[in-house]
Length: 609
Image 1 (cartoon, rainbow, N blue to C red):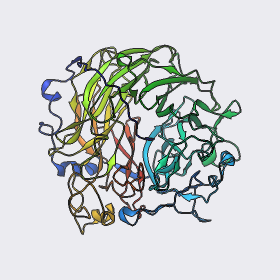
Image 2: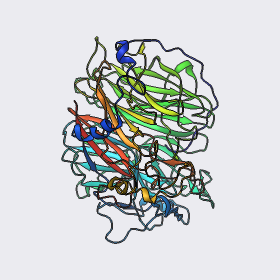
Image 3: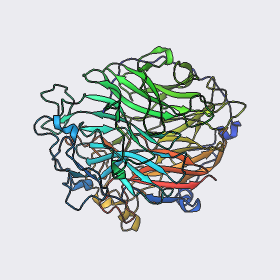
């Protein structure tokens, strides 16, 4: 999430064309009031019962870099905030270049001059498995030096032992000349090279601590770089000789920065970028890279795609000219492009259409496809329409965090009735809480099933931010954040692990603080498995060992002067490694390695049941 977008077009009502994949009893029996509900104690104990493992990945190394814009505000001691901290001579363990950087040589006076600061918080994430080596995993995440200033670059954490240890970490180099580099998403090609699609952009801070996006070259931090770009950084399968692994990235193409698209002026602002790569050796489009993003002009947003071909050495062919994608009724209020490639080489993407002032009402989610490597695109159908969403409606009850992506998309890897299934999960607001719904198409996207409820909590609570993944054996998983468990009680070891004593001021909570025993407040991460036809496999499983407090060290999205809009991420990573589910999600709890209760990324694994 870069910054809030306000659109003014409305969407017409569209009926869902559907059929029942599941028997009626199964389709209606998932969630509050249904027969598949489970008691909170059973859910709480499912972590151990399902043999889930948790690894606090981003506590294993300490990173430092020099931000383009320094930020002095400190919102502590409430919620554990500590402001920016200068990096000492022996603080970092990552062997990365701490700056200043070559791109910062064109900065205006007062910018890009250091000192390097310690990376403290890590929110919003993605995770990928190397198709050439199942022990090789890379996660990417917002690498935050100032939660108060929402000041971050993209960072990565890399494992060579299947996710047990994360020995290589650091900020992703090449884009330090912008204030922020945001929205982590990556993909491996068929050769084992890892691609990260970046969104660098500029802003500076006003006197009150708010963000100023003015592109006046006399005022912006660095007039030597474009205001905003969509760009690529590649972590090659064969490391660059003589360079630490944390710095082993290719960020140029044809001896220039590897820009997919450039947006140098205010009024054409890219956001919500995503990518996928065709890694099936039998596909006609093997190693084709599909990069997608939306461009906002203050009133409208339009979806674009560009393609290139990955090469064995970590380089690629030239990017194609950005192409406008077809959308529902060809309106211009479209975003959230989430491309996936089916094993036959067909690439699909969901597109979300929303009305004026995103979040005030509803969304419609549709699907496009291309069967010729991205040269031409076809609008398929609308999956769901007029869905009331919780994001930006004032946030979630009791807490200050918001989120900005309301749906997720996946393509099945085994056929059902001769077609690769398509899946869409989404948030839906109902009676003051958020639930997670799921629908599927088994006929290539022409019709969609009646949505089913994913979360099985017995009492109402917020379940939100779903993330879909599809396994090679046809299993589908939906991960989501879950608030069914109350915060730990005072005096317990879990309350100490959650750091609840730090939570002293909360403008959105009317109860007493710290929030010991508070309901619909603290957060866990959950998963639900399904067969390819959406038959559920068991109940929701808790995949976070510790309940955590979303108020602690939560980045302030707009201003330190406005603590009522905080951030835990718009999405988090979910994938499969063979028959093992792998996810990476945020937590402020401590397993003994996070005593300051910063936002860390926890990698959870469990076997497909």
